[in-house]
Structures are given as structure tokens and as C-alpha cells.
Length: 295
Image (cartoon, rainbow, N blue to C red; front, side, top):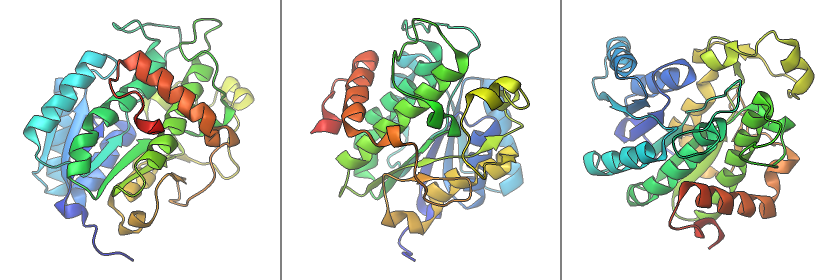
């Protein structure tokens, strides 16, 4: 085991950190001694989350930043705030995600599930890369989903025949493809990029829309051995990828709810599709350095 990585010396940003898996990830990392920045939409929920984390862990190095990450201007503002107020950033946990029963568009004219679940972490990660590179060794942890196994990349904006589960699964696959592409691009830089599969957390708002429904059983391919967990248990893979010294030895991997490196779907390893999705994501978010992953 490489003892050079000590989470107690690290600053961590956790998006979607005011509830569910994000909250438990933030709480778990604070308990290990990290400096934790919780990001969420609601100021009251954020204040409550930070207060509970501080009380439960005894770690007062926990703060909240408000940002609605379905709005790309808010993503840019968040990145600028972090770069201004935190001289170092060693871990970014992209946990935020959302799913909408009906097709909705954000203020940017983007399909809301795609915008929140994929385009937001894609843009935030790219905007924070300079700070992460300056702070290396560093880590990017993207929270995935078993749903990607049922997905293929089609119309990213889901303009025709919108389906809630398909849109979410496609967004998670898009995020996985670009995660692997980023890991390839950053190989040798000291930045590890990995994806955490939390399993199914039955006590999150997102999961409550699906657990127990015939539609979920019929429409999604779930890997053998998948289990339903509490958010605390489901956060284990994210906490592992952020905190374990073992992770210094790998990048571009998919880690399951038992913290094991496992294969993701065959579609997620299509490098040509990854490059295509990267280019489309860069265009949709207005990312200036569109060729980063292909350079």
C-alpha cells in the first residue's frame, strides 16, 4: 500500500452533497479528516448538512457553497468561487444527478436530465482542471449508475420520444465515456479519474421514483449481485475512490459498491464514441478547450 496519499491533508468538493449519497460521502470524508466543501441548490439544506456533519464528525473544516448545477452559468460561478477561495483542490466528487418524469429544458435550453447529470459535472471538471493539476496528486470521482448498462448513445437531448429512464441512463453512459476519455488524456499527470457505482440507495429521492416499480425491473439490466442499500452504505465506493491510498495505483476504472474494479458496459469502452460525446458535450456547454480529450 502506498502511504503517500493522506485524505487528512486534502480539500474535497462534493456536489449534490446536501442529501442522500452525496451527504454520506461528504460526512464520511469529513470523518476521515478531509476539508470538505459541500455543494447544493438549497442554502437552508446546505447549512443543515454542514451543521450535522460538523456535529457528527467533530470536523469543523466543512463548508457549503450554493449553486444550481442545472444552470451552466452557476457551474462557471461555482468553479470561479472554488478557484478563488481554495488554494488547493485534491479531490472532486461529481455526485450531482437528476431525473425528470417529463422532458424539461434548463435556462440554457438543454434537456434537464442531461444537463444536471452529465453536462454539469463535465463542465465543472474541465473548469477545475487547472486547480486540480496544480494540486496534484489529485482525484476526480464521478458517481455512476448501474443504469448505464441499459443505455446507448442516441439523441443526447432526447428531443424525440423522451423516456425518463432512457434519458438518465444515456446521461450516465455519456458521463462514463467522457470519464474514461479524460483518464486517458490525463495519464501521467498525477490526476486519477475513476467512476464509483453506488448500487441502489433506496432512501434517496431519485431512487424512490423507481424502487419496486415493474417498469424498473422490465427496462433496466442490473448486474448480478446488485443490492439495495442505504445512502450510507451506497457512499462506500465514492469514499473509497476519494480516500484510499490504493487508488494511487489506477485510473480510468469502474468500481462497484463493494469497492472492486469491475467492467462497465461494452458500450462504455467505445473510444470513438467517447471522442464524439466529448465533442458534443463541449459544444453544448460552450467549453473553450474542446479538443482537450483528443489532444
